[in-house]
Length: 228
Image 1 (cartoon, rainbow, N blue to C red):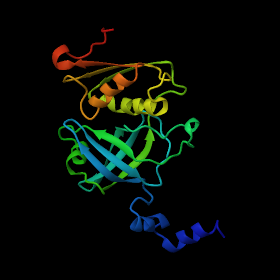
Image 2 (tube, one colour):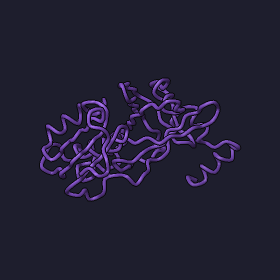
Image 3 (cartoon, helix red, strand yellow):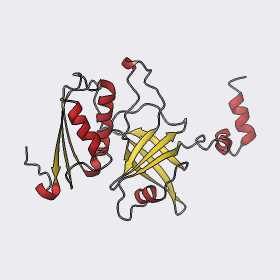
Image 4 (cartoon, rainbow, N blue to C red):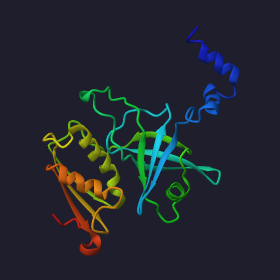
């Protein structure tokens, strides 16, 4: 009987599916993966969105991966990929099963005439429902984590590395378990853009194994490949 119930529901709800009706009562449920915006923080260069994912989103992702955000613009669904900036759930070795459901964060840097970035930065509101795609991407921390890491970032390219650094701090705290990390970041201004600058400075002070080298492109120009 348990196996035939889904088929019976589908028969009675055709041409729609049971999930289509579920979405009428809970907007996070349905055939598409959806999320609810729970918080928005505006900064001079970024807008950070906190998103509660629906049950259709896979719980696991790797630090550094991205997620797709979908918005309807002029009647057409438009998609853009943004790096997740929150760390994955704690590893199983640290007292969890690795499947802890948590809110997701992305930091969006508006670009001129950007159909998605400017709409998210200027018009998104807490409670708004957006479509999501499953996390993906090959740029993430390897397992096991090597003893030495070099990060070279510039501007908005810092976002996937923030997820990696936050995961390392979540897993190792400020202990000696950290790998040796050198992080070179290039950007206009005396420190990385908010909301990341203060966090990175505090991390460099708290964790001896993490070394932040900030390059102010206004004073020193952009990084060049021949520089070592």
